[in-house]
Image (cartoon, rainbow, N blue to C red; front, side):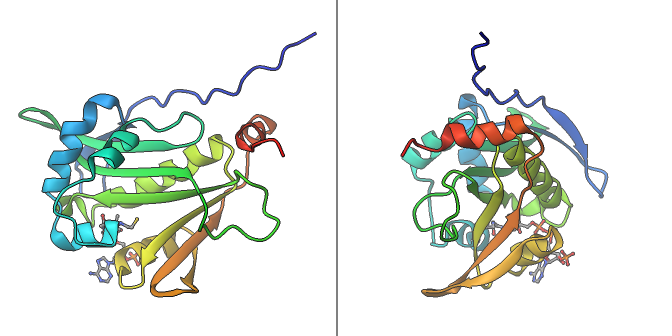
Length: 208
Ligand SMILES: CC(C)(COP(=O)(O)OP(=O)(O)OC[C@H]1O[C@@H](n2cnc3c(N)ncnc32)[C@H](O)[C@@H]1OP(=O)(O)O)[C@@H](O)C(=O)NCCC(=O)NCCS
């Protein structure tokens, strides 16, 4: 009798992306060694970008959250980083992640648990307007589909026109958050591509 194979998501192989302004970045999965570079990248973000991303004025990164971000749970969360060569090795110029959507997400009544993930994305300011954000989001959606997610959502400040435009261009619907006028929830369906990917969802869904 065949023992069912655990669904292990394939490793992401780093790739070189050429942006529309001709600059090149390497796109790869985050590693535990990226902590110092993430802190440096945060230091290069403007106060406005930090506010748009974290929805509060942040002077420094929350170290516990940083630690969690460096170790996404395989098959459940994923973090992409876009890097360029730098004197000290590399600089991180953009990052995008998804994780399993938790309580407070926009899950619909009756929606099976474990099918929805939540994204976040940030570019260092010099790299805005380069097309990198769109490419990161496309890779993020493909990877989330591989992990068996059917819906991706994100919380975006209603004043964050760049993110709302980008989400619209990528096919997300935007709706105001009922109890907070300052926020929009952007949501997009991700059709599963195979039975194997669908199994990834049932693996994540706790037994009743
Ligand atoms: C959100 C973010 C990733 C988008 O990346 P970007 O490189 O700025 O995106 P783009 O250059 O593709 O611009 C997206 C759209 O916003 C428009 N836009 C850019 N700046 C704008 C501004 N100040 N006002 C209005 N529209 C603007 C662009 O024209 C583009 O429109 P289009 O899709 O119709 O062409 C980036 O701005 C960022 O890192 N922001 C800080 C973190 C953040 O807000 N994260 C989102 C919350 S998770």
